[in-house]
Length: 316
Image (cartoon, rainbow, N blue to C red):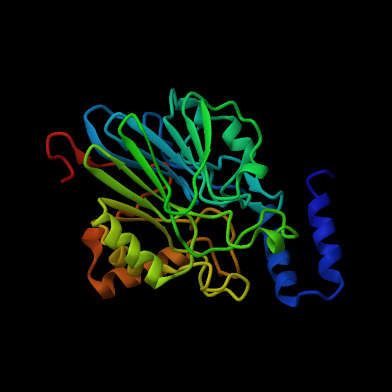
């Protein structure tokens, strides 16, 4: 009953005639809840490697584990089977957090439940630092990390040679819906990580903004890897102003001058009005073929770890 309470409240709101489109979305989301969650064929059990300059593990949705030399980062961790008690996973998380013996940085791109997931963060090692977006402090419980840092747009801080900069993206704010009005344009961000000659761009969740992304490319001079969302697409609920599809993601890759792109934010949760969880993946493969950029797109399976730059030239 507790699990159904938010759904019943939402249905009551929708029943007032506020939104036919949201009603369709909710109906389809409820249908997903009874579907079985697909198991991951091979979960990541040892994602942190020796002698690595850059490696990535896709946990699912926007959750990515990044290793740069001896430092380990996790972005927008979500391990739960549902978010907001409404959206259910189509496939289980590709990593059990119990296999992580340490984390140097946990980065949160924005405050929405599928990116700032309290229960998932509780399951992480806490010896490292938690980085949160502008305006995130009032929404951040005391998790027990070594330090919690709220970075402002274009603010850079450095710890033990690791530089992390919050950079502008185009999304929307709030966590509970009713708080959007007073938060304005805070509560979401992208990040740039720089360490020992490796540079990674994390877009979080974003729509397309030419000025932002070209400025990021100019300021940093290019990236070894950019993690960029590719869904939801073709949705009347989530407009292109706040989300990019595959073609928009490839344009961001070019704007920021990324050598490689890791597509994220697809195939895990039901989003918008897409006909199936892997709809964005199909469109991505078509766009990759049309634009002849297969050598620049690192498409991982959920739970897959790939060494992108090894110490001895592997992956270079």
